Length: 281
Image 1: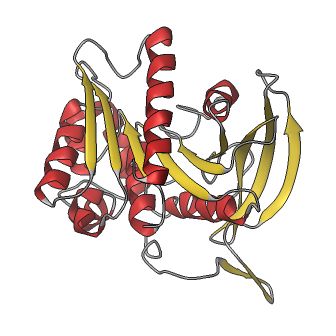
Image 2 (image 1 turned 180 degrees about the vertical axis):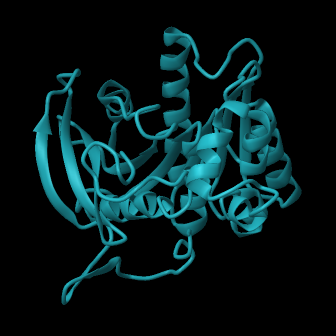
Image 3 (image 1 turned 90 degrees about the vertical axis):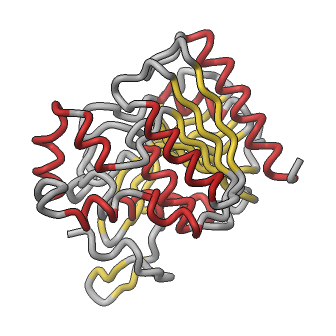
């Protein structure tokens, strides 16, 4: 379980006699867009030898020279990628790709909560890199996607930036805080933190932050009970101790979900922050 995530390889896996590069697009189909200024497509792509599904969003005017890797939270049907959400980010001038993760919405394999399914995020980064018009890539993760974003930023130091919003940073802490998730975590990870600490440690990027080269923005609501603010405080503290570029925005009045008007404002502010990282402003 979770054996291959650190094996840096140019290729994904073999299918028969063919070596298939991670991020290779198998098929794409138009998807109805909630925003006339944004084009949507459902994508099937290769990740670790599996056919995984995702959604691509592009500004209809041909802009979107920078890529935006959107890493969803939740697991299975909880926290599914919402077309309106990725269209919102694309409308800010990005080409957005959001993997559904393996085993979801017709994809092969089984999701395992930031274990081998991180390969789906890595392959999604490769997919964005393969698009001829994309000149650089930002990484964004919400909730459980925060772990995926940090792991992907560690894997790809060339990324322009990484943003974690209400993001998990410590799987030991998640197991301790979320009694309602323990059964799922034991099932997909294989046991408790006490029995398999190495598996939880492998899913916790806090232990590898000395390798972080990417500027990080942390966003968190202080009243969040889904993912406590402690996740972000630990992440910020460790990054600052290591002298890494980090900025943190805490909102004492909000929970895991921000009011719509505030959410829209923060989307504009975080995408503006991303654009500043492109030029080192």
